[in-house]
Image (cartoon, rainbow, N blue to C red; front, top):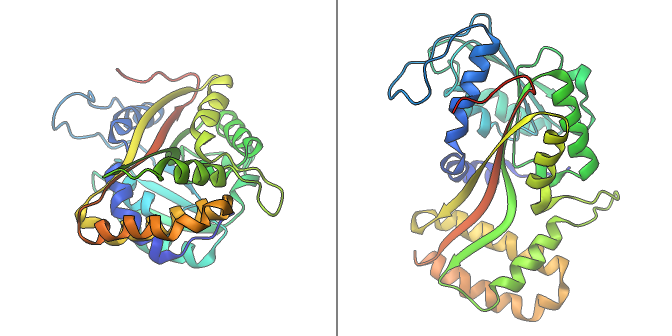
Length: 296
């Protein structure tokens, strides 16, 4: 799995939080309350206070990084929550475990444990007793077989899943540049590359592949768009994203190298001046067990 620096993950966290599809939360709360035997408030009722489920939920966050998804989600779900954080990087696990909130939406306690683990090796038996599997910016780093295995494990274990912020390959930059399409195509090819250990990553195909895998197993899948919308107040995030975006494109297609420096400079100058707007599209998935219905 790809390693990410904590500084980069913290820098992108506000953009991640703003992009996440909040419309998936009401059906998730309904499902969790129903599985706990509690009648939830109607999702459409403005200002309704969620009821506290009896007992508690076990939530496993796969590839947790610094814990940004847990920080965002724990305070938006009611009830006692037992979070189990999985990542291969012990430094990231330490950041994540220290950063999750202590209380849920309704004031119930939240506790956290961290486990260094290969998330691609999880199977249904490993998810026994789990209420919800979460992941953020993970699916596009997996292979087709790994996503299929994850879907099988989740469905066989009977738990829900909230899988957020997978890249979909669409980038909109304003003002436009003639090289935008070539750079985007090369970057997307890099996202689908074969790694040194022989794994072909799904990249922008991940959301479609995952949705199909879950649906074939009978799960109910709700899709939502999520996108970074980066404006003048996010110049540093724009800079780091642009450097990574162009760098990956050149790595994939070395023929871009003669024009890449000029292109990157044309992008960095308006970003620094607060004149560049970038929309980087992602997709979110809510997966509910086959026997459950999503409230309208």
